Length: 144
Ligand code: DQA
Image (tube, rainbow, N blue to C red; front, side, top):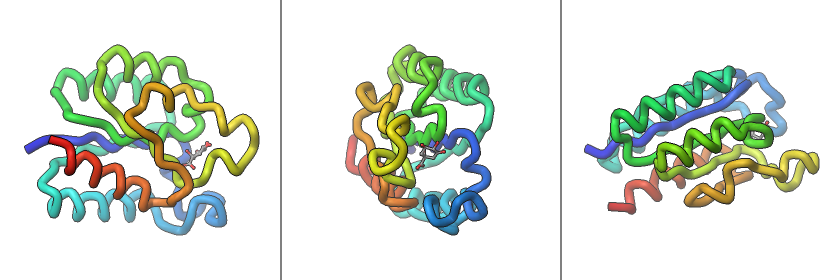
């Protein structure tokens, strides 16, 4: 069975309490539980990672490479706008990935419009809330 990694960056462990008017009221556990249910329907296997530290995300991406993961769904959170290290990890491992944001990053502060990942992603989903993760997973299911 193909395996997909779902990676969430800093402060996303606070979903549910963090700025609910921007990010909604679902917790990360709620989102991951829904993803697990969907993955069973779609015949995909999942592994999850949330970290607030950049190096943990880089190390996890390296591990995904060693374990020959098929693809990644990543919400890099604030690292979207700062992290050359995560970009290089994704480029260096050549694992295809989809970038997801809960909020519409283009409708917020200017600095959120700059992503270090979008130009090397398969695609980006932004502003659709947790449905963005679901759509990204459906994409992986449709790809052979
Ligand atoms: C976010 C958008 C980022 O700008 C922000 O730093 C986040 C969450 C989103 O999902 O909308 O932490 O990635």
